[in-house]
Amino acid sequence: MSEPGQDHARVTGGGVMRTLRAGLAKARAAGAGLIATALPQLFGAGVALITVRVYSQILRPVELGRVMLVLGGWALLDVVYSAAVKQTAFFLASKPGGLWILLERLRADRGRTAASSAALLIVAGVLVRAAADWTYVGLALCLAAYVLIETRRAESVAILGFADNRVGFGWQTAFDAAAMALATSLALYASPDPARLLWASTAARLTSLLFSGWLVRRRRIHGARANAQQPDRAGLPAYFRSMMAMGAVGWLFGFLDRYLVASAGGVAIAGIYAITVGLVGRPYNVLGAALSTQFRPGLFSGIAADDRAQAVRAERRWFGSAAVLGIVGALCFLVAARPVVQLLLAARYRGSALPLLPVLAVAFTCTMLSHVFDNRIMAEGRGRTLLMIQMAGIPVAAAALSAGAYWGGAVGAVWGRLLSEMFRLGMVAALAARTSGRRG
Image (cartoon, rainbow, N blue to C red; front, side):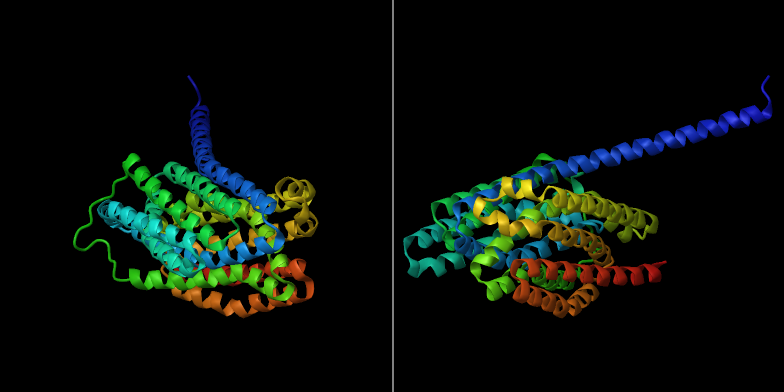
């Protein structure tokens, strides 16, 4: 017969082993989920980097600069409208009954939206190709098609990101990258005409809308039916407006620099700077999107359910993952800068881009970390406060970018960008810490 102490030791040891096995199982599941999220994003990064090489091969510096300035203006629509729709849809989906509302709206309007947008694009394409006098009319029709497409496409992507356990969202990400790269590359290969480029970009978004709708049906996503009291949508318009304003502020942080470089050093220098930012930024943007897909549902759901433990756990894992991946990426760009530019840029751009890569990598690491705090604050419904804090940082960012671009051209602008991103990270981290103290 065993002694009581021996029985207790066996029971305690068995409990420890079960706890360890459960912890390992959770870690493996989390790792598998992150890999499933990251692989499509990495595919998208690879496609984008190939596109960078294509752009640098077929466009001269002045043509590249002009294209990058036009794409920067079009990106303002993405961050002010499309991203605001997606963020608001995600916020609605986190509420009881919100996912059902989004699905019903998508089922009712998807077909009409696709047909109307296709008709507008057909007419716009004819006008853009017809004569210079009709180009602006064609672009206005492209803009109308863009608004129609992005309203439903952004909601579809939000549905996939919130409810699909990352698989369908990953397919959507990969498809978007391939469609946009193919459409824009073909347009620029035919002619470095910004109007044709914007038409091709809008057409690629239409294919993305169709694919996202098919994925939602294919994945059989369902939501609990909303009743008369669920969810409370009274605050959604204000939330959407704050997201639009925040998108405009984010655009200033992300795209103002290329215009400052163009004004200080010329369009060709702006092209070199912008394509280098794209080369470094695309991998970081993909990693940020993968981490966001992995951790944002838990963060939003935890805050919506007032589950502080879940929210804190998601936020800490998100921040830690972003910090590790960002630092590793910066070291890789530092060590492998020369082979990177030789592989991904045409010869005429390599010398100018080489010293920019490591500094940009650190700047984008700060951007990824800021994104964690941005989402925490937005999930708490404090988007307006976040907007005010970010607006206060615009003069600092503009001063750093302007001074850097004026005195140092592309190199100076890169250092100015780093300083502005560090300042922004400090501001949103301080705001998140104050919010956490009140909630604690």
